[in-house]
Length: 139
Image 1 (tube, rainbow, N blue to C red):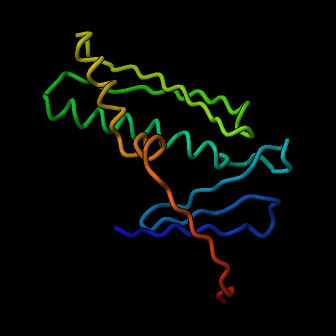
Image 2 (image 1 turned 90 degrees about the vertical axis):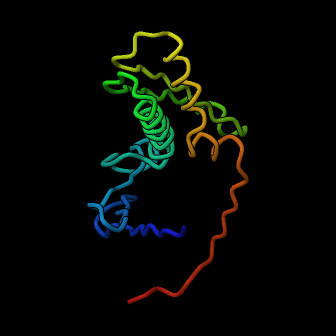
């Protein structure tokens, strides 16, 4: 499946970007003031981190629904440690609360299943190839 996301710099902002994804309201990205941005939107790292947390929650919900477990909802907190990112290590700690699940074995299974979400696998075991090309500006 091929999908395009368009990112366009906003004219009256320093680094703020408008993100267009077909079928959705525009999203925005910016950088913290410490890096010269306006801190008016999540930064790219935030989107990277949240994609993991959201994917884990969705994957666990799908599994619980299929098993007809009494899952009422999931709360996820993603903690970032980017202190060694420049050295090549970016750490994410994901804390998950499975509301309505009292059975410890079911909670452990939902956590285990969350490790199989596509984004977790992409971040930890896939080879990602990125090709960047300059193209003529379209008017």
